[in-house]
Image (cartoon, rainbow, N blue to C red; front, top):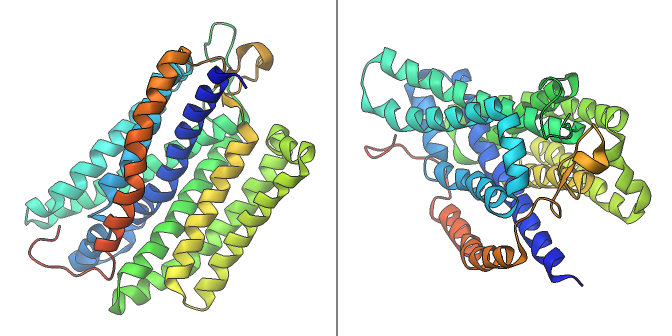
Length: 340
């Protein structure tokens, strides 16, 4: 087997893994932010922020790994996608900065207006990130109107990308509400349980709508399942995990519901990977010529193997760090003088 292709495939796998890890892990952080203004009073909002306080910044590093991998291993794809998606990417950076500032600065002042401003900023930042990530994901599924010069011919927003964006927001809201259900207790816990019922219902409705729209408008996403029927195992797993959420919520198995929520996001992203393989950017204008794949966008073989070596020493550490982090900060949120 060609060693160049092996190196390209490994880095492509690392890029995709980082995206899946980011959406799964930072998804509940964004969901908590999207639900932030539905809480009442300083106590409830502090509980929400402190539930993600120890982990949100670590979860965000996965998107940095993904962006760095795209830049270093697939510079052609990066040089075409980044300028054409300039505004969405700038909004993502703004969302990250605003969210970090909101979490860190909220507790630095004592006035109600100060806290209200940063509460609103936290909500807006989380909503912006959830919305823009969904739009970009929707356009990658739908295809990008890239011409022979790698320039965008068309609009960013389409009905399908907006639908995927709304689906993403509902998915993160459900994921975040289930996380809060595990981390809280008392009256606020009971309030969160009502949020969970509504968020799960909203997620399920948008999942049905997005699944139908994908089958109708994006036939290339389901084509691999016709060519390789064994891949149908993964949609079955995806549906099973979604059913697991509903069943666990009904029986008040909070930890199990969050686990199924994580699995549902993982399998949904896996279906995205299967449907878009081997493209980093599928062009709707002369697809054979203008599309960006992991084979036609990579650096030299030597550079790829160096990147494989660097990734092989760094990424495995995360498999020890993240389980340790979540183990240390397991249990219910307790507010004290050191809390946000």
